[in-house]
Amino acid sequence: MRKLLFFLAIIALQGALEVLLPRGISAPDLFLLTALILAARLPPTWGMLAAYGVGLTQDILGHGLLGLHAAALAGGTLLFYGVRQLLNSNTPLHEAAGIVVAVAGQWATFLILTYWLRSNLVTVSTLTLVLPLHLLLTLLIFPLVYRAGRWAFGRIPSTDDQLA
Image (tube, rainbow, N blue to C red):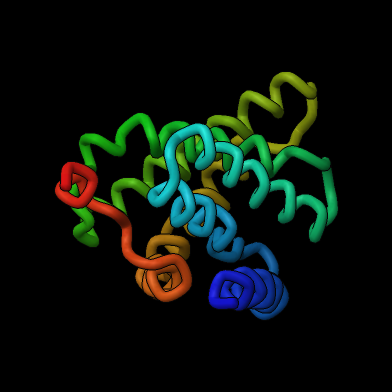
């Protein structure tokens, strides 16, 4: 029940932020944070599938290209898994660094898909105007979302817990 409430709250909050924030200001990416919350608690294969599923849910709820956010969240999660051993501690600084890496992976995936589709999904102005504020707002809200994730899914198992 907690997991369902968490997902419904994320969907409602993401929608509310998109509507309430002024035009031109991108809302924080709560779906990416949800994917990272799941990825931190799952083995890589299942975490990638969960991230893709969260992104596909975002694509279905929104409008645009079906699978675009799914691939981007999977790309961000893949990069997150790549540096997870370096960010082994669950301190806020390490969690913030993991989010920065995941956002970089997400936007790198957007760039690759933009090139592959030969479209203008991501432009230089998008990278200079939208991305910095998007990253800043995501970093500002992550403590609240991570706390809600701990409430819904339990704490992240540490390496000491896995050895026991």
